[in-house]
Image 1: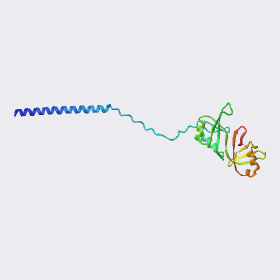
Image 2: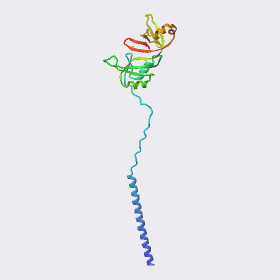
Image 3: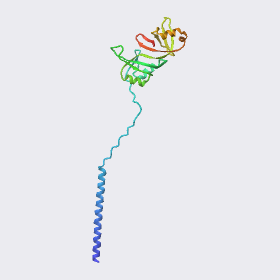
Image 4: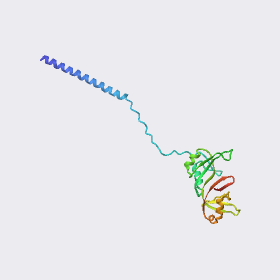
Length: 202
C-alpha cells in the first residue's frame, strides 16, 4: 500500500510539473506571436486620387481695349462688348498687343466663334487691343447726303463707313439697287482705329 501511495504522489507531482511547463510554453508562444504581429509593418494605403475631367479656369488678370476704350479686367466684358455688334457670324478676331511706345505690337489671331475660354487661352495675362474683326456681317447699306456709303448692322445704332466703295462686289450691289433696299450679307473687315470705325468689303 505504501508503494502505491508513493507512486500516486509521484504521478501527481509529475503531472503538476508537466502542466506548469506546458502553460509556460503556451505563454511564451503567445508572447512571441504578439511580438511578431507588432513588428509586421502594414503597407500604407495609397490615397485615392479622383480624376476630374473639369478644366481649371484661368483667372482674368489682363485688360482689353476695344476701339481705344478700356473694358473691365475680364474676358466676359469683351464677350459682352463684341456680342453687342449684331449680325456677327463666326468672325475671325485679331487681337493686337497694346504698347505705350508703339501704336500696335505683334498681332494675335483668335479664329472662329467668340468664346470666353478661348479668349483667355489666347490672351493669357497680357494687355491687348482689338484692331479689327473679319467676318460675314448681316445688315443694310445706305448712302448719306454727303455721298458717303455706310454699312449698318440690324438692331444696332452704329454705322460703319465703307472705305472701299470701288470694290467690284460693292459696285455690283450699286447696280442692283433693289439689294440696297433690304438687309443683306457682306463679307469684310471692320477696323477700329484713329480714322473711326471703317468697313472694308472683301
